[in-house]
Length: 78
Image (cartoon, rainbow, N blue to C red; front, top):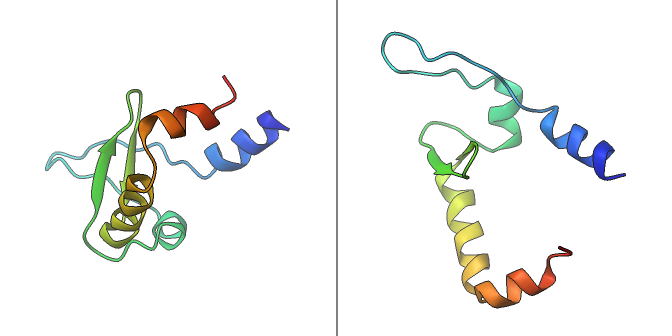
């Protein structure tokens, strides 16, 4: 089940090359999925980056502030 879940999420990914002006493309299906219209927030995640709409990222940040790192870590099954 973990592999199927991971494949389902990762399968939405998109490999791209940076053009001569330093730009990347984000396919329409991923812009729709992330509610991205124009501005974005790019978040480094150790071995990859995430591209968020500013509104959704702000919501995620507010949600994270409701719990401490210790509480979040305690919920992980590792």
